[in-house]
Every structure is written in C-alpha cells, then in structure tokens.
Length: 416
Picture (cartoon, rainbow, N blue to C red):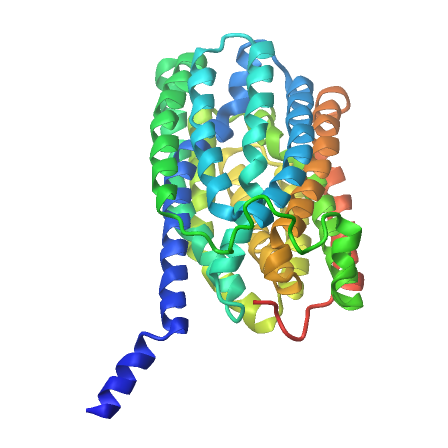
C-alpha cells in the first residue's frame, strides 16, 4: 500500500504537472495557429495580385512591405520587453483580437493608397511576435526542441493546404477584386476563432507587473550576461537570419507575378502549386526536426540554405506549369528546415528570462532584411528583368551559409 501511494505521488509530481501544463500550451498554440493560418494564407498568397488590380505595382508593393516592416522593427523592440516584463499570454491575446480588424478593412478598400495605410496599421499587431516565439520556446523540451517546434509548425500548417485553392477558386470565379474581398470576409471568421482559442493559453513565466525586469534591457548588455561563445554565436546567428530574410524578401512577394506574367500560369494553377508546397512541408518537416536534434541544428540550417539556391535559379527558366511546380515544390522542401532549426538553436543559446528580448532582436534582424529586400526586389523586377531578384537571392544565401559555418557554434548544453 505504501509503495502504491509513493508511486501515485511520483505520477503527480511537479515535473509531471509541469509537462502536462506545457503540453496543453503547445496544443493551444498549434490549434490557434492552424485556424489563423488557414485564413491568412488566402490573403498572403494573392495580396500582390489584388494590389496590382487596385492601382499598385511591384515596386509600390515593395515600398509597402518595407514601410510595414519598418514599423514592425520598433514594435518588435517593444514586444520583447513587454513579453519578459508582463508575461507572454496577455500580449499574445490582445494582438490576436487586434488582427481581426484588418481583413474587414481589406474587404472594403478600393484604392492602393488606402490599402497601404491599412497594411501599415496592421504592422502594430507584430508586437506579439517575440512573446509568441518565447512562449513556444518555453513550452517545449530542451532535448527535443527542433522536433517539437517542427511539430507545432506542421499542425499549424495542415489547413493551409486548402487555402491557396480556396483563394484561387474565389478569384477565378468572382474576379480578382470581388473574389479577394470575399476571401477577406472568410478570414475575419478564422482570425476571430483563432483569437478565442488563445484565451486558453497559460502563462509560461511569472509576470513582474510593471516592475523592472532583472535582466538587461538592450542587446549589447543582454549578451554580456552570456558566455563568450554563446554571445558570439547569437550575434552571428541573428545576422545570418537577417541575410536570409533579405534574400527571401527580394523574391517572396513576386513569385505570383513571375508565374502569371512570365511563365504564363493562371491564378488557379498557381494556387495548386502553393497547396502542394504546404502538403509536402507537412509530410517532411517533422523528420527534418528529428534529424536536426540528432545531427545538429547548424548543419541542417546550412544544408537548407544551400539547397534552396539551385531551385530558385531553375524557377526562372520555367515556362510551363510542370516546370514551375517541380522547382517551387523542391524549393519549399529545401527551405522548410531552416526556420525550426534556427528557432531551436536560438532557444538553446538563450536563458528563459531573456528570450522575449533576444527574440525581439531576431524579429528585428528579419525585419531589417525585409525593409531592404522588398523594395529592391520590386525595383529589379520592374526595371531590369523579372529574373534578376532571383539571381541576387542566390548570392545572398551563399553569404548567409558561410557566416553560419564560420561563426555559429552549438552549445554543449542547451538552455531550458
């Protein structure tokens, strides 16, 4: 009898209760992400296509992306401090309900200038990004961090398989503008449901309720609290992420224009390709996380970056649906392993009490890359040739891979 009581106590030990608590948190984060992603991908896939129809062009879209991201830079900085001082949950929930407003506005807008202004306002919702990343890092185990982050991303991505098909069907059936606006109305519902799910999120740190956090409040001083190797690796890792973000911003918004204007695809066939990308990502991302945890996150990041390059270049030579589909799908498969490996390695290097602030600098490095890359990509696409941004992408990716290879070292013992 005594032995049985002891076994029961062990089963209900603090570690066991903590594991259950974090598993529930992971389920809430993944579930909310799945619902939100299902809707938001419809907008993100076709936003440039719609923007052109209301008077915009590729270069103006690049300026729009740059302006919105510039706002996000300041918002990320604030969000990181709020996440470490007041806790993760509060800021995540408030930002989720704030995001419900913008699909409503997009559905009512008929001019690219007003669309520009609405997009700039939506950028303030990014204040929750550091808190969201920190909550994920806090809620997964250090031993299987890349695998568990990949699993969350896979669950969140599952409904996205259908999103491009739904958006493409609406645009083909009801026209470029009316179809996009109908999609925005649908996204209002998914954004609201996603925000309601987040009400079940539990806090992962003890909020300090406005008191000064014990950790340092600027990047240089924050790194001073780390070992020399961790500090040097974090700086290099964040700078490499900025290069990757810059490279991706050069081309990410312009795939649909290249596919429709150069390759000759219609919107429906482009949507099929994007859906197939999501399908393969879902099938293969978790195995990639397992490999990263076992053989090293740094290796996986370098391999992911370098294997993207030939597929991006090959895409510029596509002149049929089959050629574009093969290159874009292989590109998605090659690139999908970078983000979870980076997020896991960054968490390995960063103590829990500093994650909100360090994550804000991760977001800022990516934002700076997008600020520079998006308008440059639009300018090159429009004035030199549609293929030029894709070639510049290849050069920048090589530089990012070399930086990670030379300057980033994985810690012997990951932070919890």
